[in-house]
Amino acid sequence: MRAVVTGGAGFIGSHVVEALVARGDEVHVVDSLATGRRENVPAEATLHERDIREPLDGLFAELAPEACFHLAAQADVRVSVERPDFDADVNVIGTLRVLEAARASDTPIVFSSTGGAIYGECERPALEEDPRRPLAPYGTSKLAGEEYLATYNRLHGARHVSLRFGNVYGPRQDPHGEAGVVSIFLSRLRDGEPARIFGDGSQTRDYVYVGDVARASLAALAVGGGVFNVGTGIETSVVDLYEACQEAAGRRAEAVLAPARLGELQRSVLDPALARERLGWQPQSGLAEGLRATWEWVARP
Image (cartoon, rainbow, N blue to C red; front, side, top):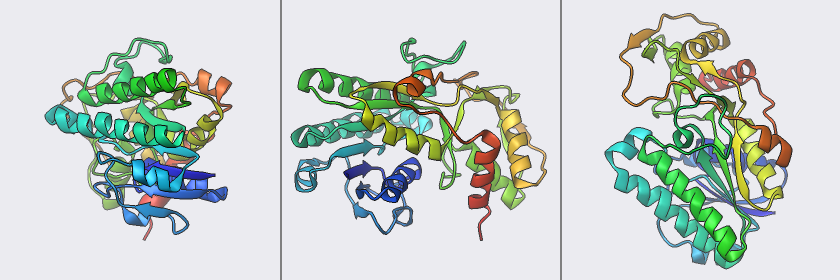
């Protein structure tokens, strides 16, 4: 298969690229390298240094891809609050550029969306049909992307799929990013620096390993549209996560408590039953196993 991966030089995108390369696919990465890294792109893949906000019709016409995995995004919640116009430019206009290029070449898209930022506060593991209550422009822009994909499915008979990811972690995650708490904790343990826990640390998230997310992305090609949660259905508090990170690293260090952050969700967890039923997907890496693999990458020479 010939595939395009937007954001393929980034954290999650590079793992999708690796999974495609591993099965012998021809892979083309579209990445502006604004946050992605050239060294994340395997030698077997071709890098096209392009911004998704620019028209991509010519590139798609030249490549005639059989699939597009759209992971390029503005993914920092704080940036979306401070610069909602920039967030919308990348996540809404950029997605429309990809949609139009894919429409001209009849290419199905697997879109990386978000669970926690779309559902808002969860009383139980969120289902795909639950109310969507974004608390930041980032969640709203991702939800807009989902709706554009669904509209193109209805209007043009396309076969696009949206995947709502839990809190993704694993090798190559940026420890300086707002969402990369696992990478932040492990990097601070490596450097002997105190980790910060905001509030009392009881807030919970659904942590899903990046290798499992890449498998879900490839599995999504088998269905002709829809929205699916990609998570574990398991809640882990920040305090318990830090304890698990210490176990994975084999190092101990006291965390520093900091004031709670305004607007932070207390509980976010996804129900992955529909993905198990329709995609034949379920997470394979437990938290302890995934954290050990991430620590090996963080602690590498």
